[in-house]
Length: 260
Length: 246
Image (cartoon, rainbow over all chains, first blue to last red; front, side):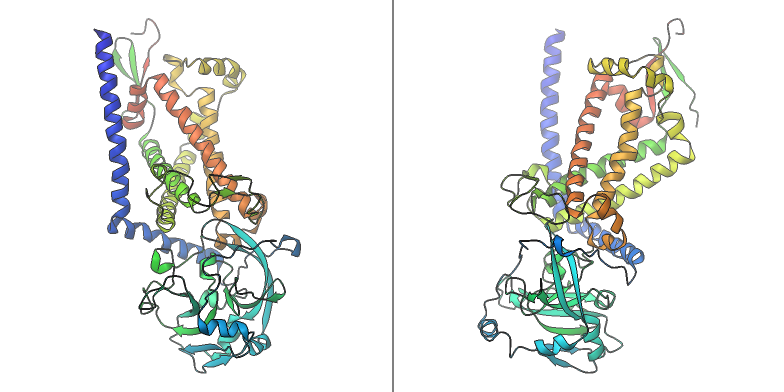
C-alpha cells in the first residue's frame, strides 16, 4: 500500500516537474520577448557607462602590448570588402583620389587625402581588439589622432557626438539603413588613443581590415571601430541617423556604450 | 523578533538559523546566478572556444565546444532560448549588476554582524575531525541532533570558498573582459594572464559553481529537503533534541 502510494506520488512529482520546467522555459522566452522587460534590462547599459566613465576618466589608457604579442592571424569580422564600384575604383588607384570628408557641426569643413592625414599629429600603438563575440587579437595601429583632426576642423559648441559613415553595407536595404556607421561621444573622440588608423602592423591598412581608414576606440569593443571610414560628421544627436541608436549594431540591439 | 528555540514536541526543536537578510540575499543570489549562467552560455555560443593569454589563437584553442564556430550549447541552456548575442548581453549585464549589489549587501551584513566569525569560520575542533566529517558526507549521513545546530566543517569551508573565493573571482574575471575596465585595471589583466585567460577562468569558475550547486542540492535532499527548504524560506530549522530533553 505504501509502495503504490509512493509510486503514484513519484509519478505525480515527475509530471509536475516536467510541466514546471516546460513552463519555466516558455515563460523565460515570453519574458525575453517582452518590450517592457527588454527596456528594463537596457537600463544596465546606462549604469555601466556612468560608472565606467567615473572610474576611467578622460585619460586612462587601454593596455598596450609589445611587438612580440602581435597576433599572427588577425581575424576580420563584418564586411571584408565593401565591393561597390566606387570603392573598387579607389582600391585600383591605391586611394590616390580618395578624400575623407569632415563636416557637420564644424567651423571649417575639411577634405583630407591620405597624404594630408599622414601630416596630422599621429600615434602608433599596439593594442588588443576585443570582439563582442568574445575573441581578441593584437595589432600595431598607426594613424592620425582624431582629436587633432577635430581641432583642425574646429567643433561648434553644440557638437556632442562624432559620426563615422562607412563605405560598406552589411545588410542591403532599399533605404540604405544597412550602411555601416558608428558614433562616439567627445570623451572618446578626444582620447589620446582614438585614431583614424591608416597603418596596421607598419603597412597600409588592407581591404579586409578597413582600407583606407578605420577608427580605433581602444576602450570599447570591436564593433565601435568602424572600417572603411569615408565621412566624419560632428552632430548634436544621432537620433536622426538610420535606426537612431547610434550605430549599425546598435540599431540591431547592441549597446551604444560598448566598454564591456 | 523572537529567535529563541521553539520546542515542537516529539523531541523536535525549531532553531532560528537563517536571519532575514541571509534568506533574501540567498534567493536573490540564486536567481542572479541562474540568469547569469544561461545568458553566459548564450554569449559563449557566439564564439564557443576558449584560449589562454591575451589574444585568441584560433587554430589552436585551449578548448572548443562543438566546431568552435557555430552555437554549441542547446537552446534550453541559453537565455533567450534562441540565438541572440545582443539580448544575452542585456540579460547578463543587468543581472551582473544585481548580483554585485546583492553580494555587497550580504558582505556588509556579514561584516557588521560578525557572521563570518560566528557562523562560517570552522572551529579548530571541527578542523581536527575533518576526516570523519568527509567520511560521513560521502555516505550521505548528516547530523540531525544538537550537532546540526551549527554548520559542519565541510559546509563552512565550501560556503566560505563560494562566498569569498568563487563569486568574487567571477566578478574579477568578468571585469577583466571589459576593454573599458582594463584601461583602469591593467593589473587585473596581468594577474589573470591576459584577457582570454580571464575569459577561460570565468568559464571554469562558473563550471565550479555549477558543481557546487549540484552538491548543494544533493546535500539538501539527503539531509531532509523539507526542513532544509523551510529553513531558507522561514528561517526556522528543525533539529532533534538530545535524549531526555523532550
